[in-house]
Amino acid sequence: MSVPNELLDNLDKLHTTELGVVRIKRNLSLDTDDVVGWCRDKINSDNAVITRTGKNWYINIDTCIITVNAYSYTIITAHKEKR
Image 1 (cartoon, rainbow, N blue to C red):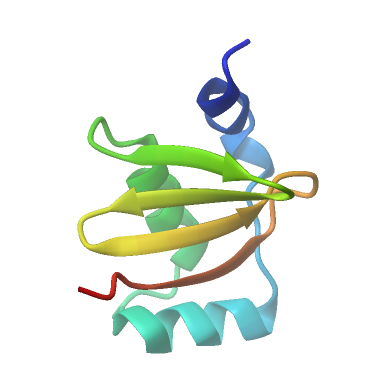
Image 2: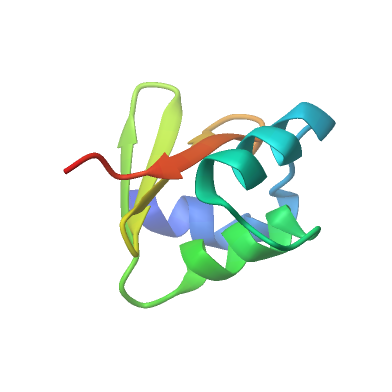
């Protein structure tokens, strides 16, 4: 199993906390209540660049960076890419 496929194979386990939802919506100026679904769609898109560093996955997509814990599949945060 290649490393990025491990995350893609476990997208059904993706989740976040209530505070995570608030943080992600604020950081990305999202207008959706389904933050996990939004992140899942972004991670699953063809142009997502998925890397793993230590205990976290980092997904670069559409000028956003989504951080996911590699063991619990918790979305920790997401923010706009700094240029």
